[in-house]
Length: 194
Image (cartoon, rainbow, N blue to C red; front, side):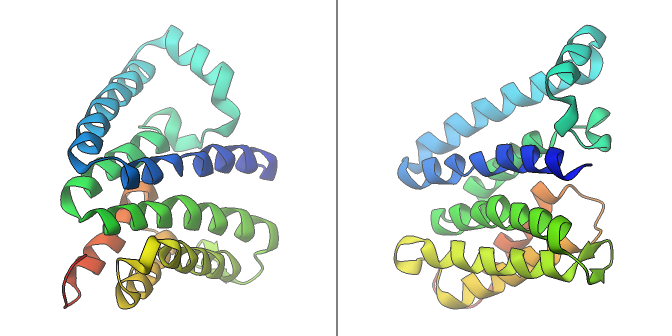
């Protein structure tokens, strides 16, 4: 994917920061219900896109340049992001759910943009520069949470795990593996949960 297409894709990705912000401000029950409805609707949309040729052609005409090749025949990254958000709001306390979604949105975008633009030192299929950008951005996101509610140790461990899950070639969409991996790692740490 060309850098201009990656920029457009990551601009869309970054705009989804509204999701963890809304989860932070909304009552937990409301965010769970709304997220469940939206996720079901988006899954239905994605199923229609995958199985209805006329709809698929119109969709590719409008957004085809920002799609990754594997998304042409599988769920969109945005669909995986919503599924991950839904799992996070049910599996984790609000401070962890909001934080790990921020890790995904900001850290993943930083890794892609910095890595593609300035990445020189290859690690696996990615770059050291992109991974360091991911880690720094995840740490910033974690410490921006009001009062650093998840706790310093959880923020650091979650940031490192999010970065590793962004880097490693695990055959699961990174929109799922980053927040879920970081969230479960944060939950496993001893001490009172937020």
